[in-house]
Image 1: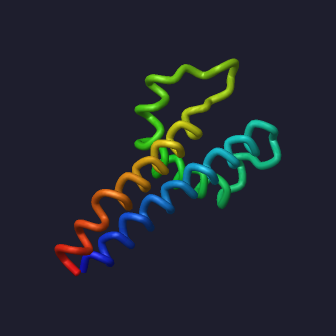
Image 2 (image 1 turned 135 degrees about the vertical axis):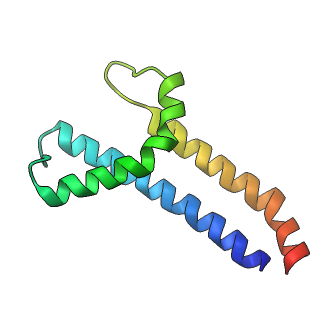
Length: 101
């Protein structure tokens, strides 16, 4: 059971990482007019990614101002997610595996 919880936490953190990366790439593609919101499929993907990443990025966007039009909050959020992953794997995961098997 402990291995399953560790796997689940690591998978969720990995999916959050990929969602932030894909959302940032899509925002660049929108900014340079490579893709646009008129395409229904692209618009739906952007809406889903925004719904997933907005709660993660909102606290960072409140604290970190955009630097010359460049939003670095996704970078800081990715660093925080990786910090949490390392912290969880080093401190909580061994305890969960030992207690739950």
